[in-house]
Image (cartoon, rainbow, N blue to C red):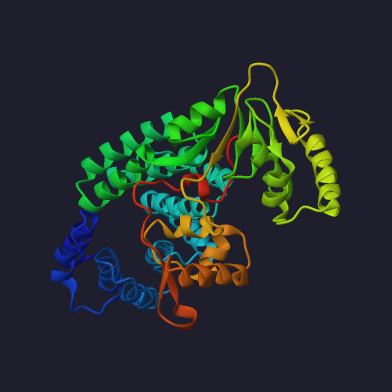
Length: 406
C-alpha cells in the first residue's frame, strides 16, 4: 500500500473525509476508489459513495477477496443509513465470513454491528442479541467499541431495561471521546437524549401524565395492571395478555380502564369499540357477546362485572389500573415512529421494518402526506419519505418488537 493510500485511510479512521480526499481525489485505482467512496459516504453523498464502492469492488483483482469484502461491508452500511432494508443480508454475511477467515477482526466486527443494527430496526431483538453475543468487545478500537455499546444500548432500550441502557450509553460516550470522531460523539449524545424524553402518557383515575422510559420500566415492574395501548396488551407483574389480534376487545378493555374505578356506560363502550352512533338491540347483543369474550381472555388479570349503566373492571385487592398510550396517538403512529429518526425511508423499507405489505404502507403514507405529516422526495422506485422529528419525544414504544414478557 502506498503512502497516500495509507494517509487517506488514517484520515478516514479519524473522521476526516476532506483530508482523505485531498490525497486521493484524482486517483482511479481500486484502493483509492474504495476510500473515495467511504469519504463521500462520510460527507453525506450516499449515491456517489455507492457507485464508487461498486467500481472499487470490480476493480480489485479476483484474489483480493478481503478488499472486495470490505467494499461489500461499506456498501451495506450505506444501505443501512439510506434505510434500504431490502439490501441482501447474505452478501454481508459472506463478506463477514471472508473477513473472519482472513483474520480481519475489526471489519468483521463492523459487519456484525451492521447486521445487528438492521435487526434492531426491524424489531428482531432476539436475533440481534444472539449476533451481538458472538462478538468480544474487549479488543475493539474506540470507534468500534462505541458502535458495539450503541447496539447494546439500543437493545436495552427496546426491552425497557433502562439502567442497562444508561450504562451502555456511558461506555459508548467514553469510547466516542477516545476515538476523537465528532460525528460519532454527536450520534451517541443524540441517542442518549432519548432516555430523558417522554415515551408515553399514563391515564389513571381520569388524570394524564407524561412518563419517561425509566418510569415505564418502574411501572411494568409494579403490581399495577397496565392496559398498554402501545402493544395492545394487558399486563401485570406476572401475566401478559395480548389482544393485538383482537382490537375490539382491546378497545373495550381500554374504555373500561379509562373509566376505572367507575363503570363505563354501554353507550361509551359501543361508540368506541363499534363506532355505533345509535345503540340498538343488535349492538347491545353484540356487546354482551364481546364482553363475554373479554372476561374469558382476562381471567388471570381482572374481572369484568356488569352494572346498571354498563360494565366495570374489578382488579384484585390492592391493584391499580392504568392505561399507557403513546405520547401522540395516530392511526399510523408506527410509520411516524420509524420516520422520526430523521432519515429518508422508502416504502419498501418501511414495509420490512413494520412487517406490513407495501400496499398497506403506501396507503398510510398517502394519508399522512395528505395531512401534511410526511413529505416525499424522488419519483418511482427512488421515492423516499421523511417527517420532521417529533420534538421532545422518544418513539421507542411505537417501534416494532416485543416488550418484556410479550
